[in-house]
Length: 502
Ligand code: BES
Ligand code: MN
Ligand code: ZN
Image (tube, rainbow, N blue to C red; front, side, top):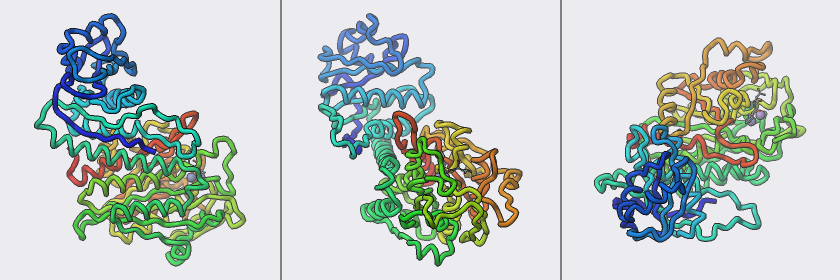
C-alpha cells in the first residue's frame, strides 16, 4: 500500500530551507540548474567543486548525497543527474522525480525540499509541473506488500515532501495542481491495488464491495446488479461468459453527480474479468497468472472515478463495470454457441477466450439508459494490441474523430499516451458469421481492430471510444505489477472537460 507522504508547496530559496534534505538537479556536462547554483553560491563554490572533480557529472539517473554543505540550513543536499539539457522532456522530468524519491528513501531524512519542479520541460506550465510532479512522486512511493509476512522496511521513510517553486504569485495555481496530482495518484494506487490482488481474493463480489466502499466514503450513488437482474435485462452475452464459473457475476454501476442534473454524463465502462482462463478455449499454462490483470479496465475506471470525486469535478460521471470470471466449468459456453445480446443482436461464440467483448457489449447497451454524452470503454482486450503497440501506448478507437483527438491530447498531457487506430468498415467484414449476426472473433489478422469493430456495433447510439490497455495497464516479467494506467489519461480528459486543466 501507499506510504503516507505529506505534500506541500513553498516558494523560497534552497539554501534557506530548514529541511532534512534539499534536492537539486545537475545537467550532463556538469551544468548546474538554477537552484543548484543558488546553493553553490551560498556554499562558496562547494557544489561546483564537487562537480568539477567528477563526482557528479549530471548523467541521467545518477545521484550524490552530500552532508553538512556550508552556508545552508538543511542537513543534506541530494544532487540528481538529469542528462542532456536539450533532451530534457516529459519522460526525463518523470525519471528525475522517480530517481529523487527512490534516493530519498535511502537517506535518513524524514522530510525533503524538492527543487526539480521548475526544470525546463519545454512549454509546460507551472500547474503541469506540479500536477505531474506530485502524481509521479506519490506513484513512485507505491508498494504492494500486503501478502509478504516480512516487509522490506525502509529505515526512516520519507514523511514530508515540499515542492520548491520560484514565484510566490504562482502558489495558488500550484496548490490546486498539487491536489489534482495527489488525487490522480491515489486513483492510480486504487487501480494498482485492485490489479495486483490475487484472483482468489479479487473476484467479482470483491470488486463490487470495493466500489460500494468508495461510494460510501465519497457519497456516490452505487447499484450492484445481480445475475437475476441481468437475466431480466436480457444480458445473455455477459451471462454466457459467467456461466463457466462458481463466482456470481456483478454489474457494478456508480454515479458521481458533480454537474447540473440535466448535464449528460460521461460513462466509463471497464472490463472486469477477474480471471481469464480462456474458458473452454483454454489458454496455455505459461504466464496464465497474469490473467488476474484482466480486470485492469475495471480498476482503471474505478480509480478515475475516485480521482474525479476527490477533485469534486463539476461534471456527471457514471462508471459501469461488468465483473465476472472466465472459467471452463461445466456450465461454460462452447465454441459454436449462439447467444442473444441485450441489444437483440445475436453472436456466435467461436472462441470463448474472446470474452471481454462479450461482457462489454451488454454493458455498452446498458449505458444507453443514462443518455450519455460520451461513452469510453477501457479493457485489456487483445494480445494483438500488445503486439502492435507494446507497453508504450494504449490502443485508441473511436466512432468520432474529435473524441479521439481529445483523448490523445489528454494522454499526451498526462504522459500516459494512446495511439489512434482505424475502425474502417473494411474490417467489419471479418466478423461475419454464417449462422448469427456476427462471430465474436475476426480471424488471425488485425485482432485489436476487429475486437474494436465488434464493440462498435453496440455503441451506435452515442459518441464512443475504446481504449485497449492490454499492453499498458500492467507490466509482465520479473517486476510484474499493475501500472495504474490509463487513470492519468482519463483523469486529464475529465479535468479538461471540467475546465480545470491549466
Ligand atoms: N484478456 C485477453 C487479452 C490479453 C492477452 C490481455 C494478453 C493481456 C495480455 C483476452 O480476453 C483474450 O484472450 N483475447 C484473445 C482474443 C482472441 C481469442 C481473438 C487474444 O488476444 O488472444
Ligand atoms: Mn480472453
Ligand atoms: Zn480477457
